[in-house]
Length: 264
Image 1: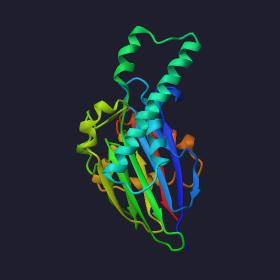
Image 2 (image 1 turned 120 degrees about the vertical axis):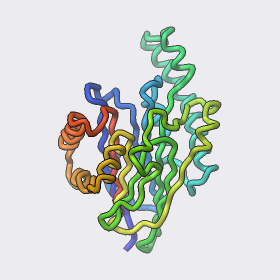
Image 3 (image 1 turned 30 degrees about the horizontal axis):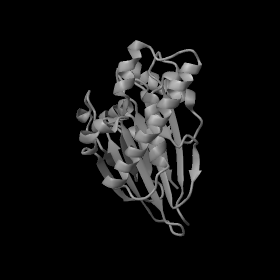
């Protein structure tokens, strides 16, 4: 029997922020089961210091997931180039909406708009055989959003960061301005391999990923602690879980995105 993909995502803003202030992004937005020759997922962490980083992160994940083909240096660069083009269109519409609403751009916003937003990107593509239980996964990353593959009860892949010490204050970021991306595009990381029924992939933005790696490094199994949120509707429970990590000093206060992808 052919493989299929089950997914579910949890997303939370920083403690003290409203939901509309969440600046991460993920796609697809709908949870459930998926079949097909190619299935894609992506998450992005919009840089808080940038203006309109949330919308830029959304454009990045949607552009990645709506693209096709194998993940290569050329194809990932094309995704980013198309996202930059989409940003130009979105920005023009955003400025028009503000003008029509009587809220034109103020002088203190002009510099932020000129520089543009920045964000990370982690995308994964699953190639599924249409008639047999076989498949592969490929991932590409720019920045410190992470993918973890758990198979047979063990952490088999940590990508692109494998140690909590690798997280820093200046991750590689993608700019909405293609002229600022020359050095970033030289830092794209790739990973991939075969998949098997029962494999669990966890995509996380950096705050949760750092906690996850610290727990794994200490000999614990954080994937088991998170797995309970996959099979039940647990938005409130997940929010309480994240709040407990923040209050206990185990995770810094940042936007949190967690996407489960299970091969079934």
